[in-house]
Length: 381
Ligand SMILES: Cc1cc2nc3c(=O)[nH]c(=O)nc-3n(C[C@H](O)[C@H](O)[C@H](O)COP(=O)(O)O)c2cc1C
Image (cartoon, rainbow, N blue to C red; front, side, top):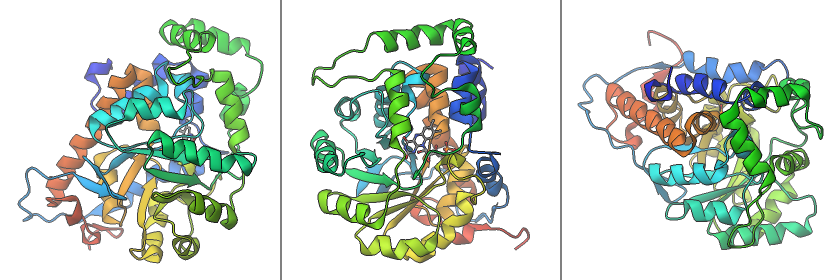
């Protein structure tokens, strides 16, 4: 398939896989351990069955919605991924621009090839969200949060599912995060010249932006990834809540019994996530956990979900189960790998078209019409 002939996210993934070296593809696509949870995220969608309203009388549904007070053009947001620089030179800047053009939100990762101020500038004009890994020293926290606020980010998420780094067999085999470059990697670079030119240009010529913020090389990014895993406790959430004025999300919740405590601490949003199957292998599919979290939160916070969303039907199923919106990670990274910023835009438009079509087919004119009656897990009822 050529990129302009791609019609699904799966097509874009196939193109991305050819465009980038295998070790880079592995680091995006891979999960932890035996990848049971990675597969579970996708398989769970097949057990959720639609009960469409045939007489809904909907042809042109309205996809707009509000997420923690920010208006978005559709309920599909971009998850934080700390890998942009290894995929394409434009990396986070390209993703932020694509999100703004699509009228949706990119949650910028703490692990980034560009300074958070530069990404904020690229995405300015639309809402900006930031994902926080706690800095190694507690003293650094206030400074970092002040920087995030100053740059114009409106919401902040603490990722809580990385007390230690996940067991990524593919990356360990490829030694992707090691300090020495393996011959296999050089060979793969040589056979992917278009990717290699961008990679080398970005690596050896770090630009300094107008604000004086230094862009990181892939190796510095790798070091930051390795240093980012840190346990988060209730005290940390309390400390961040005290320092951050705007909406606060917790990303990586998989148990309903942790929700009440978070809501009491003043958390505004919960992201049901297993880190795309990259952290603890053997944990449940996120859409299977979603309904119990929605019930536990009971309207006191907005509930989001990510993990394995590749189709508009997946998105509508999660909304029916009570999610406010969903996040996608790998899909836009594949778009970025296949065609840079426009590749990300194409992937987002694929989601938009499929969500619109699904809403029409289930008889939902607005996002708020998507309710639990539209899905079941037992066929025939
Ligand atoms: C390459 C890659 C890098 C990621 N980096 C981060 C990160 O820096 N911070 C974070 O909270 N989650 C990170 N995630 C997890 C995503 O935010 C998200 O939870 C996951 O990708 C969703 O699953 P999906 O890729 O199947 O859509 C990363 C995921 C991938 C694939």
